[in-house]
Length: 137
Image (cartoon, rainbow, N blue to C red; front, side, top):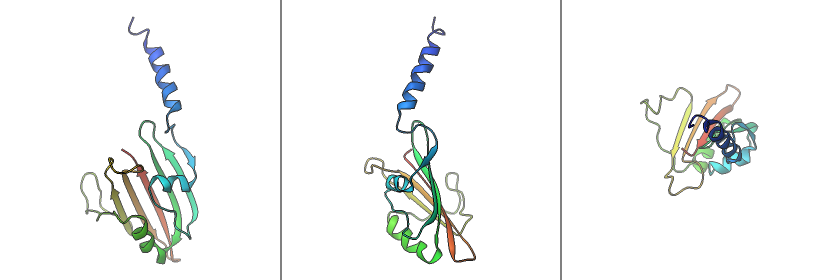
C-alpha cells in the first residue's frame, strides 16, 4: 500500500518544486543576480551573462569583462566584508587565477547571498574576465 502512494508523493514534490522560487537553472538579468549578492555590476562591465540555479536553495552565477584598472575599486566597494582567501584547504582550494575574493555573510543578518565567490583573470589587452557565484546555502 505504501508503494502505491509513492507516485502521488512524487507528483506533489514536483508540483511544489515547480512553484518554488528556485525552479532550476536559467538565464536572468545580471541586475537580479547582483541584487541577490548585495552588490552592483561594474559601471564599465561588458558581455555580462548571468544564470540562476538550484531547487531548494538558490544561487546565481555570471561572467563579465571589465577594465583591469577598475577591478580593485569595484571589489572594495562591492564587497567590503570580503575575507582573505586562504591558500588551499578542503572547502577553499588554492587561488589559481589572478584575483580570488570570498565573502561569507551571517545568514541571520542578510536577505541575499550568504556566500559569494569572485574570480578574475587578467587579459593582455587590459581587461579582466570576472566570474562570480552567489548562493544562500
